[in-house]
Length: 136
Image 1 (cartoon, rainbow, N blue to C red):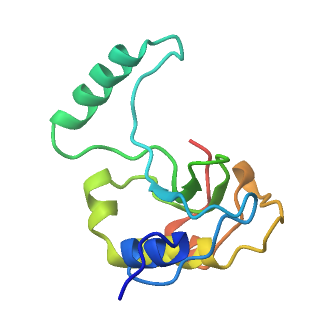
Image 2: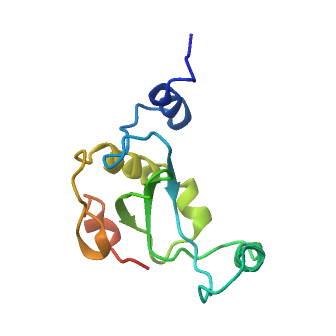
Image 3: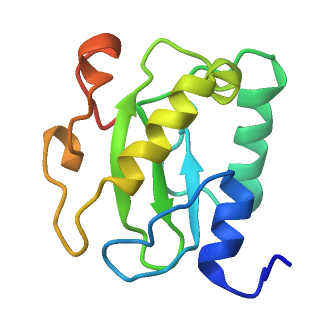
């Protein structure tokens, strides 16, 4: 019987494979991040941000701004990233190879090791295929 009260087993059930905990804090509360291109100033209120998000996504193909990665929602640690410049959010979400690579990179992290590279991200094997990493 599946024990969804166990964070490791719950993460395995959600992502369809065993997932490593956050190397910074040990949490299993990670989520994939695919930042979309939005015009923001940083001074927006929450309702204004939601409105800008709605405007950016309602047209259909939503351009991606920067890399895709897993992030810990407890300590905000960002895992190694794969550059998705020139792609759309919808394309990235449907790409099983991208999703598998993001999971592989998250699971390959060394616990408590900083991930420094261009934009604060470690390079991965798809970087040669998809191009250099940027930090949006």
